[in-house]
Image (cartoon, rainbow, N blue to C red; front, side):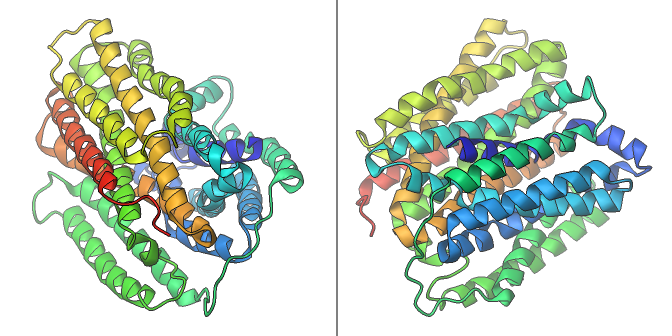
Length: 451
């Protein structure tokens, strides 16, 4: 579990850790701000594009092998990022780093299912979910700490000793899994290419669409974003039609035919969309709307992850005693209430009024994540644990992308600096959370034994 925790923490953390350093990177490498954004985008696109292929590969050749290979790629690419002296080299190294992160994220939950006995699996997934949630919001804080004493290359250099240690531990400790039944199954390069192309086009289309929001219906960014999305949808239709006839599909349409699994995907996507909407909107609300200092805003927002950290182990012990759909439905209902109460705050709220609402959101998020992940992993047949594990990361990244582009659209017509835009975002996040709670509760109508 130490290997799993360290691997998932560093792979998720590196998705956001460079955000704070982008201005300095652009200045040092003589690049524009638009070019610097590709330090982030290259990592995210590569991760999203290869999560499912590596998950599928894990089902065929073993999760341990895929995990350790991903970790090796990630560590080697971190050296490339550290030594990069131009923006194209840095972006290329970040893409390879994202490829390694995809190998780590794609099978980490499948490995947890091999480490823990089934009766204790909820606790293992709770730990994994807790680390993933904490890492997803810790990037700016970790980056600030490193950049206060060192230059931006150290954001990547610190991965080197950590990667070597985790690789050594992984070779010693990670369990082997026997290959599952895969009669007639083949991993075709055309399917891998279509998967990568579909997710890349959709990601870039959403990102471009968010950039062009508010610039007019004929703005180049808006037109380009729509075109990229349209081509991505066409590629997606071709790709999914191919998957429908595969005995072990790369895109797990076989798992999505299971109602409980499909509802769990809907729960995850809507919940992470709500979380991303909130996390990006809150700094604008705290700093510009309420006049808090950056330190005050950071401390107030930290109430959310602290509440999640406290409640996740407790919820992990409840998994198996109560239905996952019930726990997730209650959790996202609490989160929706907390977000609605944040949106209804007065113009000059007291810190205590902000904190207890943030705590509500953190409790709700902590109650949703572990039971939802538990359902996704245990609903899939054992030989498709890799595919289910890959869908966890895919759902998270998809929800985050949706939340980010919706916020960009909101800020294009509502002022982000007077509190109006962030309040709209919080209200919409509450609706997303409520929708996720509905998806989760609907799972109670279906039998848990989907095998």
